[in-house]
Amino acid sequence: MSEASATAAVQVTAAVQVTGVDKVFTAKRKPSVTALDSIDLTVAPGEFVSLIGPSGCGKSTLLRLIADLDTPSAGTLTVFGKTARQARIDQEYGIAFQQSGLLPWRTVAANIELPLELHGVNAAGRRKRSAELLALVGLGDFAESYPDQLSGGMQQRVAIARALAESPRLLLMDEPFGALDEMTRERMQTELVRITGETGAAVVFVTHSIPEAVFLSNRVVVMSPRPGRIRDILGITLPGTADRDEHLREDEAFFENVSRVRELLHGEAPVGIKGVENR
Amino acid sequence: MRTSAGTLRTVLAPVLLGVVALALWQLLVVAFDIKPFIVPGPLAIGTEFGDNIASVVAGALVTGGNALVGLVIGGVVGILFAVLAALARVVDELTAGIVAALAVVPIVALAPVLYTMFGAGAETARQLVAALAVFIPVYINTLRGLRQVRPVHRDLMHVYAASAWQTTRTVTVPGALPFIFTGLRIASSLAVISALIAEYFGGPVGGLGKSITSAASSSNYNLAWAYVLGAIIVGLVFYCVTLAIETFATRHYKPRT
Ligand SMILES: Nc1ncnc2c1ncn2[C@@H]1O[C@H](COP(=O)(O)OP(=O)(O)OP(=O)(O)O)[C@@H](O)[C@H]1O
Ligand SMILES: [Mg+2]
Image 1 (cartoon, protein in one colour):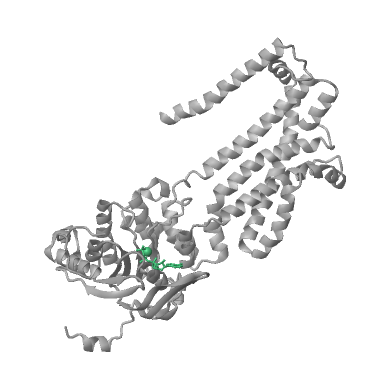
Image 2 (cartoon, chains in turn blue, red):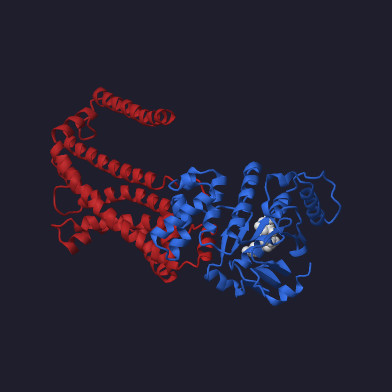
């Protein structure tokens, strides 16, 4: 590819730019934990990047730093060219956690409208937006339901709709499908591909599932623990990346990518059969 | 329906037990010829209750009214102070000592002092005693609830750059609701008891407490017990109503999503 000159001419601001970031947790009377060690990562606008790695390698920590829920011990971190703090205040990103974190005393619609309400959008505007989002996540009939009346998968879809409420250019997701069964999970993945395709948002997605990372991502960041480092970044090359659908899961190229990620994760040749779940 | 069968059982079992206990009580009173000044039989109390129903209801309205005023005032003040204490550390530190002191004071013991302060002709002293008794459990429970904000909700509000007041209004207080209602439910019984006992120390006549003492002192034991029955009913009504409100208000809280 000869895009070097084009990139130089049009300096695109990265969605996320992480440069030399360390994160050390210090506690009284305890040895300090180096959760992240010299992390460099750039996420382009509209790009889908997954973070994968064994438990405790700092995936959530990195996401929380980007979200300004925590601050780096060293290094710099920008979101659309702004400091993480400024980006948070400007609501540049939407976020979804492993727990849906819905407010149980609010209806589904009111949960989705929460960020809009806090940021002064009027009632009519909120109603319109939540109706759009409910349709987008396929929950049009559940606007007036309460979270306890929904299944886990539906609650997670509401949380994703809430994250999309202010049309952010960046989505941060920490194992949003971690608590779901395999079937729901695959359906949610397909929906997420569709939604991010429609909204054009960049995504930083934390997961434990190799097939999930491969299915969703443009690039997969493989991390290793103690101290948390980026072992490698893998570009996912799949035919017809534009419309990833269920057929892709059967595709030979998909299995090849799954094997590549697995090799990187384990630091050795894969021993399992192609396509077998490893999470 | 499973629920109606369940309700039937939870209602029927205590009712049956109550009937059996009453029958046994009546039997013992008759069999051993127990004198009314020791304890009258349920039939005698029931008859007296029926004959004096107008006076019992009037007394219940006075005592219940005092308890209700106390519950509302003590509840509102308790919740308000707890919210302030959760927001500002200073308030918390200032009130912690006062609340600890109040918690060990037998509140009704203040009644005579309050009667002289507000005049023995007014109900104010009784309402204040009830309010003080209500304040403590409501304050303590509310504050505990306000401190139970789930980390995922706290993170969310931080992400939204919400102000302290926005966070309090949208997450902290609604999240504490089950705790607030538990406090109010405990307080509702305390309100009735306090308002009733406060009448023993003076103030205007008409309430159930005063009626019990005057009936007992004129050796009308059956009537005294009829008023006691009235007081029990008032206490039960307070408890059941607060329980019903609690159940309704927190009906969606069960699963932690
Ligand atoms: N608030 C904290 N205080 C102290 N140590 C922490 C804190 N948060 C994370 N850590 C430590 O940092 C390291 C990375 O944690 P992190 O939660 O980012 O891992 P993770 O990759 O998300 O793991 P998992 O896949 O299990 O979610 C762990 O060793 C953890 O113990
Ligand atoms: Mg994690």
